[in-house]
Image (tube, rainbow, N blue to C red; front, side, top):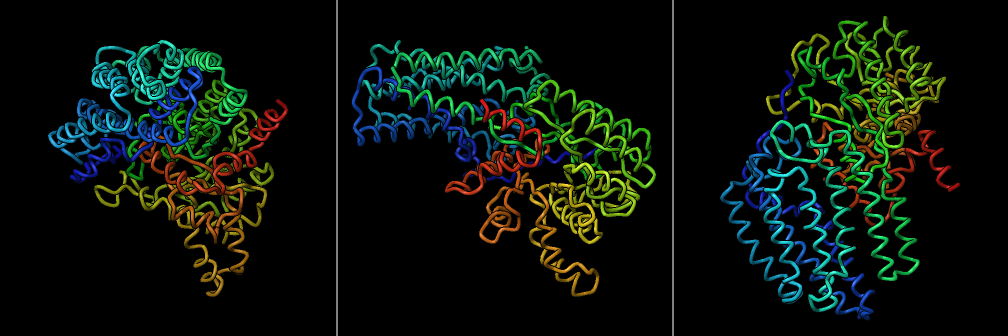
Length: 597
């Protein structure tokens, strides 16, 4: 059985308070928008002339009050939910279930936040707006209990965040009269929140079913897509009614349409799926040789993450060890590859613009290379896969530059195919049980990045890259340690007489790979790849999340780090989408069709 990687965090009260309040995320922004919308729509409908200084003071008050409210009731929510969070995969790392802070310490933090919230709201926005916040505070108090007694707690959450419209409205009008005029905006905002929260909740459906939590995702199953479609139309209509009543200018409609078109723009090239056939295969073996545990996954959980990160398309792939999990049987490995590819094709058929997939091949050896090429042809020609997944090495043969794999590379070169290379375990070929570095350290944490570097250097020094120039290769995790070690390898190998590839030629080939940013979008890696002395070629860096093996919280942190790095310009849009559009023909066709429209 694979070893779980969930560990208790060390006790850290200050960090626990910070994370309980969600100050390490940008969730509060979701609540700022409705309050600001309420203020702007009120000014338009009441024909209020906005002077810059008072309006800026109002915006500051909204920011401070909403942030304090968010901190207070997120802390309260986590106190109430701590026993449930232990059983929910994405919530286990929150401060209370992770042991970062005790319950009594969290309660003290909540009690301290209460007067802060009241005084900040009263002091920056005045008594009338404070009264406008009362419904938000009351609903926030009962929200944690709604998920235990009703299947649609998202409605309460929608009312909470939508309720922020009213304080913004009152901040402009100065009184509580005629609040009914703000109702279309309130309902539009509530529908918007419910839409995205249902998307997010689908990720927790397996855990909700296990622990008995009420949720629409559990109640509706696959029919949840119908509800999402209805909510999507409803929010657009209600926002349109709001804009018409407020007599918004043409620029509002133009910007709204542009925002709608570009919101879902990322293409995630490092996004895993876990087909039922793979679960069965994993359960019939000792598990992943790397020691990593098999996370829970559903298509809905992927769609939820995509919605929260404005991802248009995820190209799904099977993580290591792939079909090699049953490498002792070539027939079973080939059967598993076909089952996985048919499942990927099924998802693509069901969600043609949301899912693509990299095809899986049978476990590679000199004896199975013919069946691998046959599966490759079937996947690319019949199933229209976006490319194929290969792993850095295959037990019994070696790394990808091995002569036994030459026929496969020739076929890939002929097809000008895209190859997604994912690292695999570095342990001995003879292995029965999963191997951990130590009880708390599975191999992928540190070894995978270097395994990618090994495979890349092997492909260069074996001549595989120079012989197959038409193959487009994506290296996982920012190329692992390749950007750091490439110059060392290039010079040492040549100067020691171990290769006739000149350092300049070596580095040119190393820079010719594509690099996804899964778990690699921090400042240091980005400086290496796309900074002043960039290692990667322009257009060769792609977005990747590594979901579901990377927890949602971790993915969120890397997205925030990328956003911060590109805050003042750079290749943000190129990485999010542009590079993938150039790499994959079908996305180029979509872009051409969009331009025609």
